[in-house]
Structures are given as C-alpha cells and as structure tokens.
Length: 304
Image 1 (cartoon, rainbow, N blue to C red):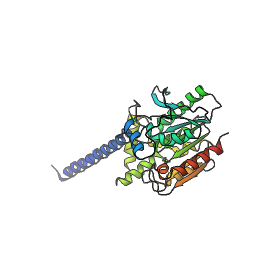
Image 2: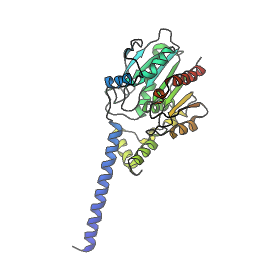
Image 3: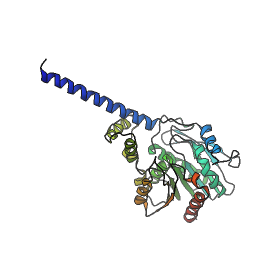
C-alpha cells in the first residue's frame, strides 16, 4: 500500500472518530436538556418545608385539581386555589427539574394579598405525562391555553397575572409574545436566550460553541424546535405587558447579566429588582419580606 493511501486512511479514521464523538456529545447534550433528572411532587414540597419557605400545614390554600387540554392534546395537570374575595388570578410556572409544589412559596403571599392561584406541572415534570421538556417552547403555549381556560371560566374582566421561576420564567416571557390576555408578568431568574444559555453552559463544561450546531440538529430532528426558537427576552418585547424582572446577583446557573439583556429589550414596559447575594432561584429565600413588598407594589401599580 502506498504511503499516501495510508495517510488518507489515517486522516479518514481521525475525521470519522471526531465526527462520531462530536455527534455523540451533541446527542448527550440534547438528552440532558430534554430529559432532565427530575424531582417528584412530594420531594419538592418537603424540600421547601424543610427550608422553612412554606409551613407544613398549608390547608389555608384549598387546592382543587384541574386538568386542562392544551392545543396539541396534552393534558396539563394543575391545581386551582380560589380566593373568597379575589382581586384576580396568578398563574405560576416552576423551574427546570422542579414541580408545581415549588410555586407554593410564592402562592402563599399572593393568596394572602387577595389572589386566586393556579399552579401546574410543566411538560416532563411532576405529574405531566408529556415525554420531554422544550425549555419554554411548548410550555409557553400551555400558559396561553391556561389563561384562555381561566378567561372562559371566570370572565374577560378578571385580572390575570403571571409569575415564573427559571425555566418557568422563560416560558412566561415566551407567552407574552403570543396572543395572551394578562395584565402583568413577573419573571424570576429567567434566561434571555436559550441558545446563549447553552453556550454559557458549554463554556462551563469546557466545550466549544461548535456543539450548538450538533445540538440544534438533534433538537430539530427529535423535538421539532431549535435553540433559536426559544428567545424569551425578544418574545416579551413583542408586547407592552408590564414586566417585573427579578434576579439574584450571585446567580451562576442563569447568569445575572440575563436580567440586563431582558431589561434592554423590554425597558419601555419593564422594571428590575436585583437581590444582592441571591443564587439561582433564591431571591425569595434570601429576603422574603422585601420580595413580597416589591412584587406586590409592582402588581398594585398595574392593576385596576
């Protein structure tokens, strides 16, 4: 065999191995993104009880199980807690790997301030039967379908607001760019762009951005969307719905600068509340009294 033929075989083998590991790692990243190791309902509830964020006895928040059929036929599993003299309804969306129980720490003070509560399990979380999560792509449509259900049931004049944490915040912002009838929204530590968040996570794993292409390929083939389809900040900017941006200054999972990006895109209708020392999804935990005060002040200024 000629020398040049050996060289070509070696080069071909190296290229094949590089491509093999490139697509293997890309597939792993998509699997990690779409099929996270999730926590169950009981665990997430007890987690906040043990941290003192919610009381053991939450019987004051009477929860009525509700099933809503989303536009693609997916069953949305949720709970509705009606207030006897409601000022409106708050729809709360939880974060990545979590469940609706993680929303109770917020629900308790919304309820105390006169609001009915709707909490639900996002796709592939809690009791949701959907086979994977889409990081806000389909979940945002679910929020719109929930709001439509509430409008149909409780009337067009009822005040409805949104609150989302982390992935739930991204879903909330994505929903604002769609045909949704709400009076205000609060996004707590949401990412401005899924593509940029994954690029940041790749950097943390010491992997180059070139893996974004492979991840996009598998996302499109297997889950029918791309990273670029989840642009929460840009979608929120399509509306003039009042938006409160909450972020912990010490957040290193969805970095703090995301709050600046969201604000820049939405500054004509947005306000910022930055919590010093708070890590990811810990703004309320860091200072519950101030969190409630800032959030309720924002709401009271934007509802009739």
